[in-house]
Every structure is written in C-alpha cells, then in structure tokens.
Length: 509
Image 1 (cartoon, rainbow, N blue to C red):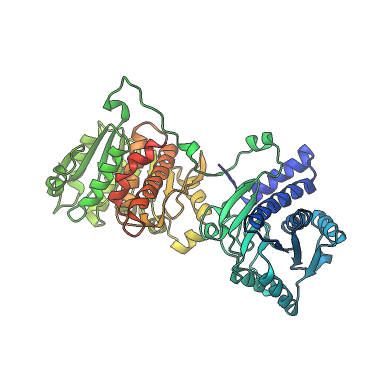
Image 2 (image 1 turned 45 degrees about the vertical axis):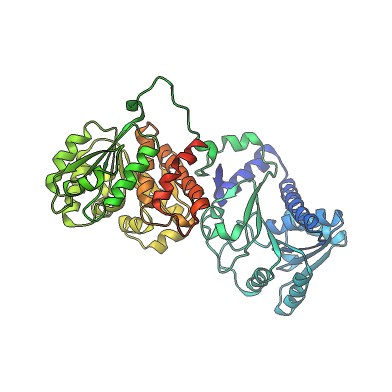
C-alpha cells in the first residue's frame, strides 16, 4: 500500500489539478464530504446531533468548512470555530468559509484568550469534534492560543475525527510538534502519510480511513512513491509443487551461539525450519553442541572448534568448509561480544561469498568495520541500539528521523536494512522503504529478534529476493506474534510462542 510524504502528496495533487484539470476546490469538496459522512455515521449510531468543527487558516480548515455544510444540510446542529482571523483565510478555504457563513451556520473566531472560554463551553456541550486545524503543511512548533485549544480538545473526552492528519503531528516524521490532537479516527486524504505509520503518530491517529478524494487512478498507478505499508497482498505464499524435495527449498547455514547463549541459536534454527527452509544447518561452538543436538531434531548441528565455548579465529576454516554447501548464511545470534568474536566475524563476512543475514552480536562487530558490507549481498537486522552503534548517532536521533536514517544507510551501503522496532522499517536503495504494522508489545522479549533472523534467512534460502525475504519475514514474524498473543497475552508472550504460531501465520498467507 502506497505511503506518501508531504511533498509527494502535494506533487500528486498538483498533477491532478494542473495536468488533468481537476479544480482544487473539487478535491476539497470530496475531502470534506467524506469527513462529514464518518461524522454523521457516529452521530446517528449514538443518537447524537451536535457537531463542533475547529478549523485553521489553510486548506485543512477548508475541509472542515465543507464537512460543516454537509452536516448542516443533513439536519445536525453544527458550530464552527476558527483559530485565526477570518481575514487571513484565502483561496478555496475562503470560498467555503463564505458559503457556510452565507448559509447561516454559526462561525466564531478564537484568536484571543478570553474567547477560549466560549469554545470550551461549546466543546462541553457537543457530541463530536472535527479537528481541521492543521494538515500536512504544518511547519514549526504549535504554541499560544492554538496549543491551549488542542489541550482543551484532548481533555474533553469527546469523540474526535481529524481531517487528513491529527493537528500537530508531523506528516513526514510522526513527531508531535509541541502538542497534537489525539484523534479517535483520522480520515486521511488520498493516501496514508508517512507520519501516520510510525510512533508517536500511530497512537495519535486512532482508526485510519483512507479517503478517495478523486485523484485519477492512472496518475496513482504511474506514481513512483518511495514508501509502502506491507499488506497481505505483498506477502502471498505460493503453493508448493507436488513433485518436489527438500533441496528445492534452500540450504541455510546459521552461525550462532556461545556457552551462555544456547537459546539464541536454537530459536533462530527452529524458526527457520518452521518457515519452510528445506535444510537448516547450525554451526555452534563445540562445547555447546551436545546441549543443542538432543533438542533440535530437525536441525543438523556442527560442533566447531572453540575457545571456552566461544568462536575464535581458528573456528573460521571449519565454518568456511561447511558454508560451501549453503545457499544462504546467517550469523550473529548469541555469539557474545569479545575480541575473539570480532576477529572471527570479520573473517567470516569477508570470506563468505554468499547471501548473508547479519544480526545481533555480529552487528556490534560491524560498527568498527562497517565499510566491508558496502554493495554486498547482505541483509542487516539491527534494533535501535545496534543501529546507533553502526552509524554513530544516538537512539533518539534515529527515532527523530527513522525514515531519513534508513534512506541514508541504504543509499550509502547498498544493502537491505531491517530496522527493528514497534514499527519495523525495511528498505534497500532499489526497492524503496516498507513499514511493517504486524506485531504487538508482547514481542519485546528476549529471543524475538533471533526468531526474526531465522525467518528472514529461511525465506531468502527459499529463493526470495533480499527485500522480499525481509518483508515476508517481518510480516509473518509479527503475525505469528499477534496470533500467539491471543492465547498467551502480551505479558506472557515468549519467543518460543512466536515459533509455535509461525505455521498458523503462514497457513493463512
């Protein structure tokens, strides 16, 4: 599903207006009408009649005036408040403001502190609020009277519908610009905006409805956007041929584990086999192989020469020999982080000329030798802390520009990135950026990332491209976690529970 930046949406509307010839006021008319339809639905369902519309000076306010007109014509009691002087309103918004004023709809300006009391009283008396203060054109932090208005809206306890985007949410980053309306429903125009796909924008948007405002289909189909939300249509699982064997579904080598972290290796291997990989081999330090061999019945385990239960430089040759028969190699879960591991990982990454999935402790090694991945057939799966170490900026800096950081990284290093988080962001420079919205807070648990690495590696070994393996892995990992949470709840969810439900997630694909 296409996701647009503020600029991309503006360009698309401009093409519809200037190339196709659709009057801009028609787009505003459609937007406001759809906001009115959802407002009317709520009022009728709850046997209510009073709607209050709060508008800013731009086109978002214009959507609000149109909505007010439709609601008024449907017999509802509608009041409109403007957060600016009516003299400051221009263009299509001004035309629609004039129309509702000529119709006799109540309109009041709220530009001084003493006028806020009037608004506050009317908010207490209304049944629903339409937020049409700021759209995606917001620039800078909200303050002064408008901030007070938004605080009153949020404290009112009323049902809130936001037009296009909750006022105060940055349409590109999802950040709160000083303050923001916390909507129950957001009617976003044409396409979901980037800022509605990640936190905190996600939790301020409520239920999101995509409104068709009349942009022609042929323009939409031709438009080359950068961002997408992963949907079920993107991850269809194909049926297997009847005449087939295990070698048709890939041979994966996982390099993982250490004396204190056998679980990471086991979780990664089991998730890979459950995701459909034909043959999964697991290379672990010799000291821990007996622990794993007995429990991993479907996995081929190799005990590799180690130093006190940890891989080191003399482990490399054995690994390279085993890797010759692999289609894909995954490295990182449970390796630990010490000087011996650093040398070991560096040698493996440099020496193996196969598609690589790099996770966990192997990512920590990369932070000092990051240039060795440039242009390689590699998928990286860092969480925010690991990403911080990889590129040398803080976690907060990454959160503040997660799309920008992703774009910078994939453009510079030409690899596939899976940046794990509450909304995992996936990208490579050829295919763009994808946002995964499956999963739940219960998946923030030890071993969940190891399961994801196994799933991505499995899809890659089965022949999917790097970007598709990452997309499929993230989507079905989250879906399995969602299914598991229905049984176990979010507090008690474990990584093993996610593996338990991989089959259910994939069966429905």
